[in-house]
Image (cartoon, rainbow, N blue to C red; front, side):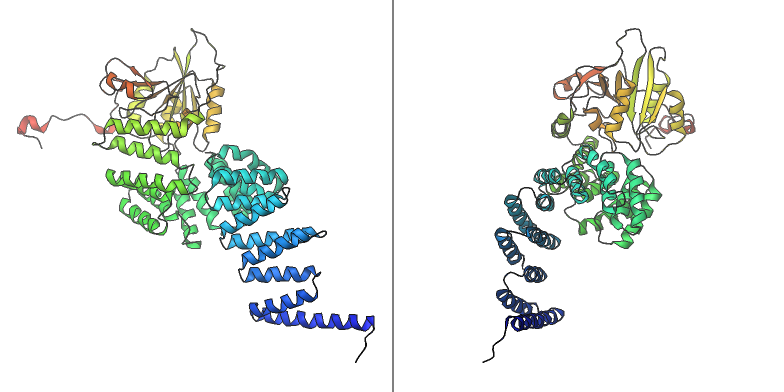
Length: 555
């Protein structure tokens, strides 16, 4: 029987450990994970205090996607730890991260909740909890968890990125902006931060700033398809079609599977008159993304352009239905608005249905925005010139201009001071005419409702005219915040916007008879005779004599 002294026994134990370690490494290299796990467990029993072995064991469990076992292992280690607890907290993060990457969101939520309850001060536990809620489309819960995370680690850029996304997902991009500004200061060269902040500004309507930020993100990652797609969407909103198409084409080459790119391309094609091609693109995107509210919205818009109104209404309704389970809070007002516009254009839909939906639009999206101030700072002088503002996206060669131009041209300038707030992305010779006619012309393309509201209040507008109704690109959400003491809606299709924040509907007894007053939101303000005057295009020439008068029949 051999007797070892203490020094010899220590050397023997080290040699055995090296042998076992080498064997485990060989098994791992051969991807024999089950055999490696057996060796590790045997090794751990012989050296129960070795934290490195526990880390190896956990990493191997994660490699085998045994997340519950890894959680149980690390949870027990954390509960027993009296020192070096941070090692096991970091290991817990590895478990959460690996499970999240494999889309095990239910598990991540459960495990992160346990860690947050075990030690409330761990910011990343709340962060992972928020991420899991976001992935499960539980947006209010995600926001709550991520707000707790940032309270515990105020300068963590990764938490800030997730928190900004949570605000956007809940439909609160304006509330995200202070965190966006902070995130850019903390991580000015972090591409995911720059892209996320750009998204916040884009959804807040600050398109010019969002474009600058997307371009900045691309200097770090020029082949990032998601950033390219986001930049293309911002260009589209500003009517910069070719720049948008270039971005979408590059993004599609890099990521053919990326959601909504084809429907975004379709949006541009239809404006160039390539309707059938646009529909084919959008239908292909629908096959890939049947639960995307954005794609269904685009499809409805294209069908409406094709005058297939029944199919368009069905597509918009589908967009609303899938929006209940997607990151789409910000899309919903626009979807409702286009659905209303489509219904108004439909010859067979009764006024009662339109009014019901317009009131639902107001209740869902506008009443919560309506924080009417008790006093406006406007000068109250009966002898002053009234500051009259016009908001619209048709201050270009557009059918609406045939009605707006005669009104602007014939206003009594001794009585009114004219402000134009043009929201369209492009300009032409008509825009120059409006600019020459207005006392003040504000180009509001590329800025959001928040900044536009500030401009109107700074200008101290007395009476503000809403020109778009539920047309695409309207600013009804801005009107819901009561930007002027008096507001009115004019030039439309004979029905209400639905907004209780708009005071009057300027019309005539032919377009809007008094009988509809009980069911609409605004108070009808009838003008004598007709409420619109039409300006024919100069290139139309003079009217010819009716062929019927000589032929005796209608051709």
